[in-house]
Amino acid sequence: MPSPTTPFSTNRNQLLGMFLALLILDATLILLTVDLWAIGRILFTAVIMFFTLQGYKWAKWLLVGILALSAVALVGLLLALGSELSAIVAAGSVVMAVFCCVIIGYLAGNSNLKKHFAWKRQQKT
Image 1 (cartoon, one colour):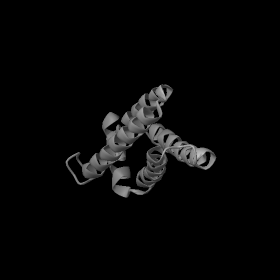
Image 2 (cartoon, helix red, strand yellow):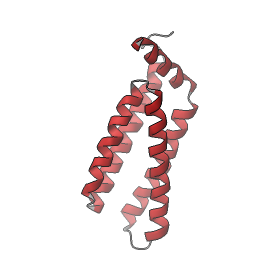
Image 3 (cartoon, one colour):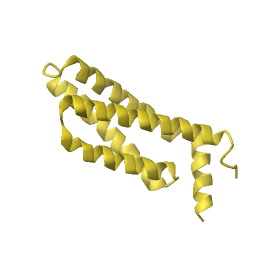
Image 4 (cartoon, one colour):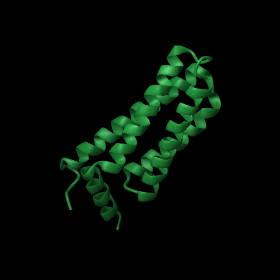
């Protein structure tokens, strides 16, 4: 198995960057909409992201589900309330929905990332 200094860790760092960007975008949208109840959702998602980065398969698939549900909810929000939302919130929601789909694709399709997670799981045993 590869060591953590291989190119596989680069994929992990890219994923970490995507996670941080998504959390920042989500927090910004929460501040713009003054929906303080959503802070708990961000914290929960951040914890699942942490476990995903540790290589847990259950966390990866739970995160995929959360991101898919978020993308569907954001599109539903735009369809239901599109005319009532400010342009910034609407644009941010579109960007966040697309970004959720990009992260899902990255998690599900990146073979180097899968190898890195397999290495992380092997280190635990």
